[in-house]
Length: 478
Image 1: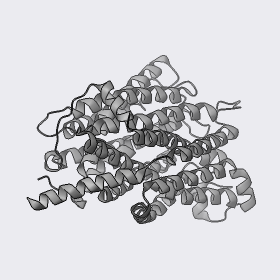
Image 2: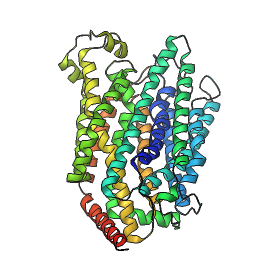
Image 3: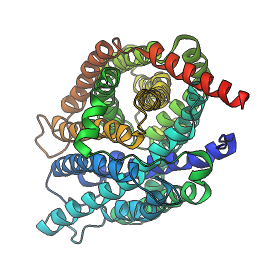
């Protein structure tokens, strides 16, 4: 009989989520900022304007295409250590190292060599990311089979991911501190990026060394051709509905990760470092909502909370789109607090600072729902499929979900990179363009509401609970 994973081990496993947030955050949050320079950044232009968004989009598509391949390899793996852990051990360090190398193109100005370097490093980064993340996320789904404990598991998963996402927003503060000591901007950025890449690499490696997969999971190899396995996965109606809704929801949510720094400095006229305050507020408030998300999901199911999260996102993005009117209505007087001025910059107005605070406060609940509930729902769907078919294709379910996530990131990366330059005359993002990204996000999340309304959460959970109950009774008799 396999062991039931303890709370302590859950935290160890979820260090991988902290690592994913840190390493992935360097790309999602800072690659555009590093290569699409602003006048105040002090950074040299290393790639043609807007190209990094396109290259990231190509990399993410490559990543999404390799997901089913890696999932298929992992699902049919017969390694005595398990189907997931060997891949994680092999990929953890290269995953972090290649991420860092993206920010070290050979020349100090725009050149063909830099373009080739970034393309190669991005493709390697996404390849190692796939070899680590697909088996890791499949392992997570297999470690917990109880639907209620699964929500708790993905609450810890979310907590660690959010903490990792928050930690990387310390990076601008670190850069600012190093620059104030006289260091060149590009050197300050690279040192700061290196610190976080090392942190991410270590945290990615720990779960692969600390968890014995065979103790918790029945690692039964499952072989099916890739296309056949993918077809069977998407043929499941509930999974298709969840996948489309998640695609649109992630598309809208990715705007926040990609454009937050621009919302803070371009729309609200505050220093980039103030994004750290906004994220800190969202994390603290978000963590406080975790018990409520758990309790409400047990009481009402996942679907109502997903719908509520999407509605909240729509309201927030419309608020960002109309931030100039909202900020003016709140107040145009300059902030007097020296502490706030230190983060927001001289001349910051009460209205703009208040809007920034409201973004952090209001985004907390939908982010908590986004990070906990879809992952738990996809794990439910994978287990339900195993119950119905007898084949454990967890890796392929993860690959399908990852494909959706990465497709949304690729599209957003390209869209944001060009939309925010609409009307530019000086090669810098425009207020009109940055504001338009918020409106596009609101439209996407409105569509997600329509799709999620068709998801049948109660049927899936009921089938799993009945199956687990029968198994428990059978074990008791024996």
